[in-house]
Amino acid sequence: MKQSLSMKLGQQLKMTPQLQQAIKLLQLSAMELSQEIQTTLDSNPLLEVEEDWGDNLPEVDDNTDDYDNFASDPGPADDFPDPQDLEQDLGSQLSEPMGETLQVDSSWEDVYPQAPAPGPASGDFDLDPGANNVSDPSLIDHLLWQLNLTPMAPSDRVVAMAIIDAIDTDGMLSTSIEEIRTTLYEPNLPELEQVSTQDITNILERVQQFDPIGVGARNLQECLLLQLIQLDPATKWLSEAVNIVDQHLDLLGAKDFANLVKRTRLPESQLGEIVALIRTLQPRPGAAFDTADSDFVLPDVVVRKHNNRWLVELNPETLPKVRINDTYAGYVKNLSSGADKDFIKDNLQEARWFLKSLQTRHDTLLKVATKIVEVQQDFLEHGPEAMKPLILADIAEQVELHESTISRVTNRKYLATPRGLYELKYFFSSHVSSASGGEVSSTAIRAIIKKLTAEENPRKPLSDSKIAVILQEQNITVARRTVAKYRESLSIPPSNERKQLI
Image (cartoon, rainbow, N blue to C red; front, side):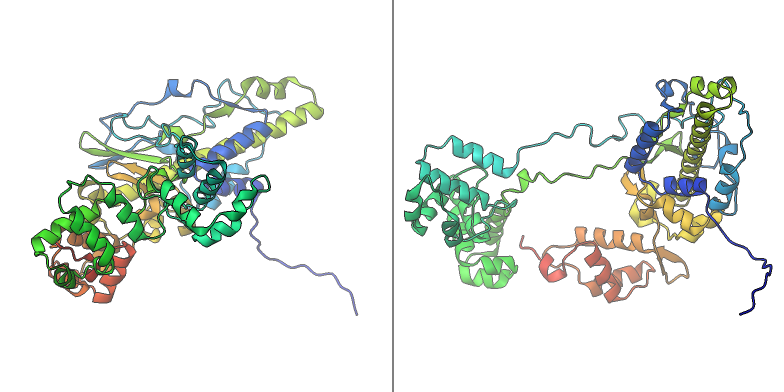
């Protein structure tokens, strides 16, 4: 085989470590960003926490008018990157060569100039929903506490503990009496071998007297009956409610009120009052003790109305309060060449890249959120029914970024509004053509369906076909199966299951 040398000209795209870092920070959530900053602070001695960050926050200028009814406060307009693609811009910004001797300013605000304006007043909405979160005791702990206050023989107490261990988070007994019996064995208590299923049932009945009422029930019917018999005997329609739960719970669950009237021979008006009494019961008695941790979300961006203008601001709670340590940075000029100077220089360069990446992340996030709110002002004014159709390409075109960048920015980033907390992706939705030739957001259609079902006559709930006709009257052309799909996405049951007896 003959060997030869040749030249080949080609192009190849490579991502520098700085570009990779910038893209990584761009797609992090607020919690992940906080962890990443802490990790960087621990590894880079040139970075420190900014203690007096809040002292120099800029004030909102009420006289500015970026849009007619809309404004943002990102700081100087020059801070926004202006590239065809964010990655290309980051590559040019973050790959700038550093000289042998670095120029160290007295302040590094030029690298990370300022924090955005403070968020809305505390009276508008809480930016830290988990601040006052208090851990409550679990259902099992609550039952064991009551068991410790109940006089019992040692063997009975062991059986009661086995019963409590078999109660699930809904408060229902998850295993049978026989299964509990087979699991009972205590070498120090040989009398447990003689425990019968009837003994366990008797102890279960004692546990079922514990709070919350209905706990330890083996099925829904027993759970409801336990709660009914605990009511005041003078309660109106109590005996009739017990009879319906005991004999006709299947008809009540299917909302077959016609057959229920025939079976009970009660007038419809009286049956409505009985059903109302049954609905006051708790089918999941352990729900109040559900200790599943809630995922609290801290908003990245805040929007509020001020002087008839919508202001979009970054949430200062999520901003990195870090800066470069001027003292350590000054050693670059004072130290002679050697390992110490190289160490300081390398860390100074990494710190500068990190701060630039943070600045670009927040500028890009604010820029994208600003455009989203600009498009969806009607949502802020009138609610979900006024949501406009929007796709990633629309925002990408307006801010001159790539769609993949918009996807990274809107993923797990949240916007706090007077109407609630929403992920930025919530404002993107497909469209449905209207009869007049326009477009309607699928989110708006879902909101209309939710409103129609909430205001319907419970005796004659709207069918999917009827909802489609109502939407057609509003110039929204959707098929019945489309209505059914949107209804199911909202967890709204079909019309036969929504029927209620007044």
